Image (cartoon, rainbow, N blue to C red; front, side):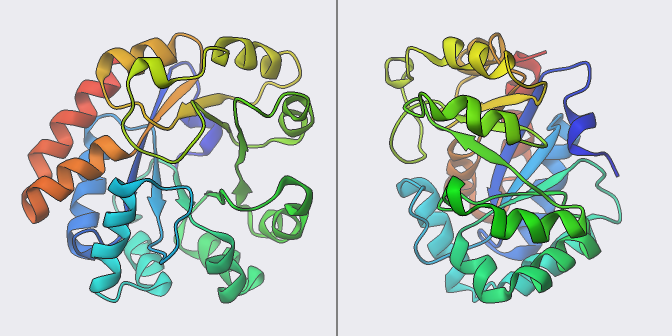
Length: 258
């Protein structure tokens, strides 16, 4: 199994996002395998949640589709366990405080360790309260990924110094979803430079990136690029026949940042 750190070694990392159970768990497994074959260095797996406050309509709708099929957190753990039989790239969960807290910190992170999930992104976990999750996660070898927004300003250095795995730099304010280049924050290169001045932890930029040219532009200033809505849109359009579309799209994005 490849570590998060290894996903960034000697290359720019393409990070793809998918919502587990969209449209059904069996197809999520197929699509994750396609993403890995196409060149994804790491995959974020969204655990379906009824109130995904960081997500725009595209991923909100993916959550709704998954929840209509009664996908549970245990279903997602079982899916990852099966995928680990043949997929070696790192997996990180993308989920919300309620999901982890309700499951129980110890039980949740132990299951992550058991099935092979190396990291977790929790957008609604306040930095000042993150230690209550980090202190448990570290016991099970799970890395809590730090997020930095363009407006973080004086908090950038504080967050970056403590970050592990990689830093998720949000490209612009608002929720997830495809954006034009004009919507990206103009100070991203400055923020990456600030982060690099205090830590060697890799930086990946996400939110809104959906075209190869955008991915190439972001990879020029960062260590990786995160893409979610572009992939989820293909699944929304093609349902359980999106295998080739997902492969072709991820390959085009991964190739663009080489």
